[in-house]
Length: 364
Image (cartoon, rainbow, N blue to C red; front, side, top):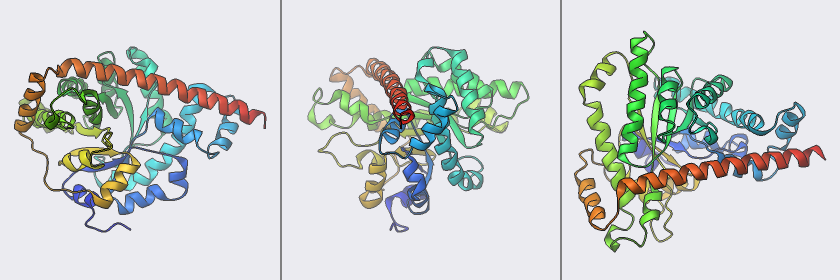
């Protein structure tokens, strides 16, 4: 049983939202998600194809739903969307009191559109509209990757009034490009006389940076790149929200697009399992944690200080990486490309698993 002084509670009191990076029907059925909300200060949830692939492939929890939907004639992406939204609607309902109490700032769940649409602006927008409409919940974010090909779709989705989780961001520059798309979408809504209060988050991936440079830099730089990138982006976020441009939007009723720290599970088996979470506590941010990391943070995490917003220490660290021969921007592009390819692979695996399950259940 968690106490009021767990690290999760302390992070919450510092103004950070903790979201669970997982969803399974079992978490919903046995009350685990409700307990995380009540005891561990969890105020939202993210999902992705890999999470659903693992959930559907474990046991027979989804078999009845798959069989019923297959008998209705659903298959492929349509069947997956129906399955996923069954879970996400239930999760959204659990978070709805938080959503209402925070004036829509928190209490969100996320659903990803097909990564096969990454270079198709019209297709991405149509998929985002479809997910948003089918969810029938006000607290569902549609995940769209922040790749250069998808930036126009992000702007169009925001203009259309769809709450967006911009995923697969790695560098500060990639974050600022996503933020620019958000700002343009909001500015167009204001110009059109529409409500500018469309929520968005920008998801910056952390741990993959340190995996990518492991063994390629001096030992004292080990496991420092991901955190430096986050601090740099956090400083940029503050600079943006001090700008005259943002002040005009805020005066019209716009709400900030918050930074979300993603991929915060420690990949290095020799490093502390709460390394990233401990260091990334900062007000007005979100940390989405794998279940294992959430439980570790609640058990033995530390909240010593809030992350600096001036970016000074990040500049020192990033300069050292540059001197060590690491091209940050080139690596960011590579990581984003690899991430996009991994999303596509996971998507195909998920659809194949659903097809295999459907065929097997049809023979029962």
